[in-house]
View 1 (cartoon, rainbow, N blue to C red):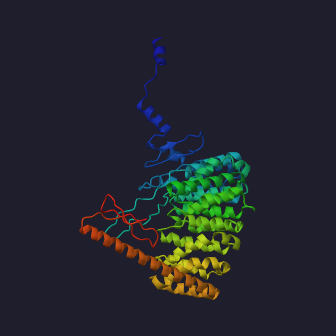
View 2 (view 1 turned 180 degrees about the vertical axis):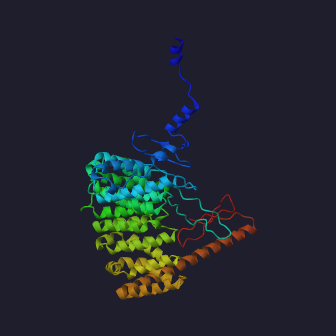
View 3 (view 1 turned 45 degrees about the vertical axis):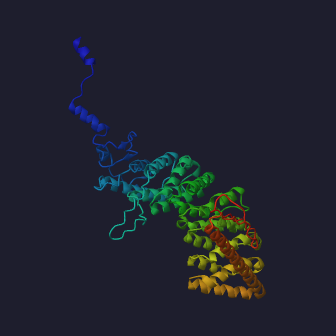
Length: 512
């Protein structure tokens, strides 16, 4: 009876039993290692840092190549390889732990890429689910950030020099990206089935990776997202909206996103496929997103791709030229000369494909801005503005509307000839002046006459202003000697006389 009662009590574990149970659970694994058990399958995801798991070492054995197994066993082998490749290793470890397991994974990823390229097995729904799990486990992670610039040293290290943060796990990530690209592009991949796993959440997380510091990763992402856009038609509106949201956040909030140029390259291909006439949503995308992208300070890093997209819109609908030019004038830089040069380059490209009717709508504010650029003290800005006259299409538009344009730019040309410090700008201005004389000598002489009249008038006004101030100073000096109140001068127009009135303070002069 006593033995039966004692047999029901919980037995205290021995030291050997405790060690066996610990090894079954994954003894020897570091505290930040994560293992997911999927029955008889290999671990689907394991994040390893400084130490390696004994259970992982026991299970992480090389698998045979697809070419070495019968066709009937390849599907099961594919599932095993995908599960094995879902283990994620820490490549930032200076001691290169798990080197054997890393090489096994790399060989299996290479075999998976070759298998997808061969197309020797049809991909069913179960396989696609495992592929999505493996890709998600490897790619969707916290991105590495750019190192903080080092302070200026004795050797003269530039603290503002950008340092690109390359992804340490690129030897594995490159193969995963290659596998995903082959999977999306494979004719064996049924888009109707794959869209359940390559869904909106997957695409959104994939687009977040465009903020990676590694340009190699962004290039892979660009190709893959473009293929997804082409194959999964159901995702097209969502992808365009997601890109739009990234641009909004970049323009109006952060001004920091590494993949703007790559996303614009994708948009360049998308815009070229827009059907005519353009939908209203596409025109709104141009006005609300494409044009405001000229605002950030880092425009130079993606200007080439942005300019290509803008040109695509104008080529699709020539009536958008006026909208684009006025948008450029709205965001025209004031103190950033390098951005101003980029604006002038893009402006020339837009004007090359602008029709006369659209040019006429915006030519007055446009050439007022060009006139300011001609007088820029930064020689590259003035030089780039003068180069506009070397373009035959732009010169033709100017000739058609010379009566409106020449009076706007003539003062700037004359000021350049008299005062600009750069000899090249000086010579280019003389060349433009000669072209305008050949275009219409009578109009040029009329502009020259009016310019001299206005100049003479301005000199006369300046002289009258100086005389008025001299009279004010004389009156103030005479009153200061006798300690009397200083009269207030009411100046109305250039010919107004001084009128005295008493004020409460001897030091106040009001000018109207």
